[in-house]
Amino acid sequence: MRPVQLLRVLRSEIASLSTGNHTPVMLWGPPGVGKSQLVAQVANEHVLPLIDVRLSQLEPSDLRGIPFRVNERVEWAVPAMLPDPDRHGSQGVLFLDEITSAPPSVSAAAYQLILDRRLGDYEVPSGWAIIAAGNRQGDRGVTYTMPAPLANRFSHYEVDVNLDDWALWAYGVGLDERIIGFLRFRPDLLFDFDPAHSPVAFPSPRSWEFAHRALQKFSAEHELLSGALQACVGPAAGIELHAFIRNLDQLPDIDVILAGGEAPVPEDLDLQYAVAAALVGRVARVGEGDDAPTLYSRVLDYAGRFPQKEMGVMLVSDLHRAVGSDIFAVPGFPGWARHVADVMLAQD
Image (tube, rainbow, N blue to C red; front, side, top):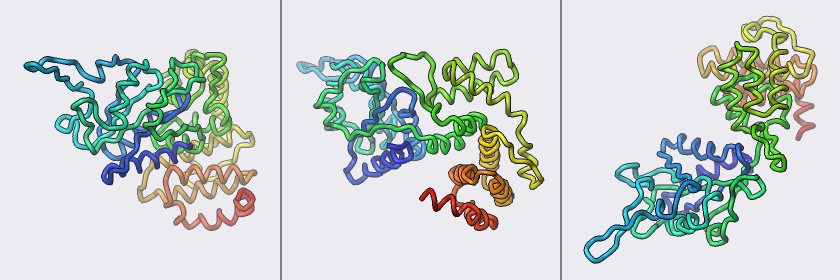
């Protein structure tokens, strides 16, 4: 399932807590596709505390608690990491990460916690959602087969990789537009993981964020940049990104375009992707100021000048994802829509 759809699922699961209809959710996917980030994003949207429990690092007693004697009875000390209304709040998200990497003895201890929302005398507060995530067995991680009794306690979703969804997230967090433009040009490199070869560094939504950080640190140190990018996303993708970036000195002036001046459309396809990403990124950072509609109009005007209308459609679609429906109210939008109507109808 696409990330934007999974976000809707997780939002609904959190909202359903108030009606008693919440079902624990299990997210499946290879390393680096953003499973943990989806959970963190939803918790942040709802301003809810997130307790991230890495089950692969626990012993059964860490989850069950430590026994202690009270008179002639044995009671259990509740682990501090489990949700407590007094310390964590009445609502939140309990995230059981790396659940498929947990030894069977640990996952067995989680059975009752997940389905019955209890563990001995401890009870998960009613306002807390339970979400888990893990890698599949074919992903070459340290994984155990999920026991049927545990699997039957979840609703299961597979996390797909989708470039449009990733671009929406990337513009929202201010990821370097050079990376967004490169991946628009080379979409197959958003995620390229072959478990048969056990790569150390490989392209994934997570590692492209690492590449963003490398660009911020090493852009001025040309002798280090290529190696730093390869260290994040692997040799092949790192070398391609570095070559792409070196070619960006041929881009038209983004400031001239946004000022309404005349600027050429690049002939090379990779540079067209780069200028599109740069325009969307620049406008997204402006926000909803008084000059935003003017900037939208100028981007629409430039989008209409691409030799291939499909490129202009991609640019405006990304702009819509980044700034929302305000773009539809811009005076130039109807004219642009008529200009690309044949392309849009062909896609439908």
